Image (tube, rainbow, N blue to C red):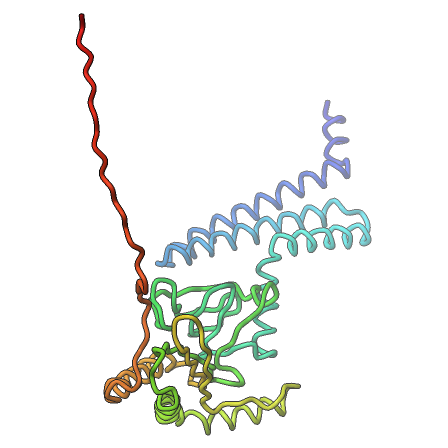
Length: 308
């Protein structure tokens, strides 16, 4: 009996199994100790949860490498085991790795920086922080119109820069082209209407033109694009209902709503002061020649049959 036990204990396979079990037990005890000594000091629930997951993952990885090192008889086998472990880690952390790669691309490729207004993954907002894994946006839009902040803080994964387009409102050209459409009633002085529209837009949106032109010149030199028109332009079309004027102008991306409000306010004041020469059109229904209605009421005869 004693010989059998001695033979069993001297078996290399048994020794490897015992060594693996002892090593895994030590790793489990170390993980439990870390849970008690580290996570109890963290007050934030989400941070504590992430730290616990990280400790567990490190424990699993250490146990796997230990078993692979003990079981492997040759260095080549160990290399294969480490390669398999590395592939497993890469697969399980592919989103994290992609986010880190996205952070590197954002940092060196200058996709955007803190303070820029971007659309990333369908979310529009101002960049307020760029982390290693996530970008933090102060969101605009949704139930709020006119490029206004809605109060939500959104964190999006940096890996999104590889999954779709990144719209930057303020990188090389911090201006936008905006348009307003004004319907003018037929019979109005169309020349006066165009003059009012052009003058109002020049006075309100015109101060942005020099800065926009300077940025535009740099943009043309940097990219293969043609020279852009940044001065306000008024165009006209006519349809069945009214004369339609479209005003196109360049504006700072942060003041788009305020500029549009000022232009509309000035236009309405000027139209009201034109003594009826220019009138805003609206949808109306007019019966030009109503049809004649000929209603004839005939007599209704009621026959009664008497029973004999």
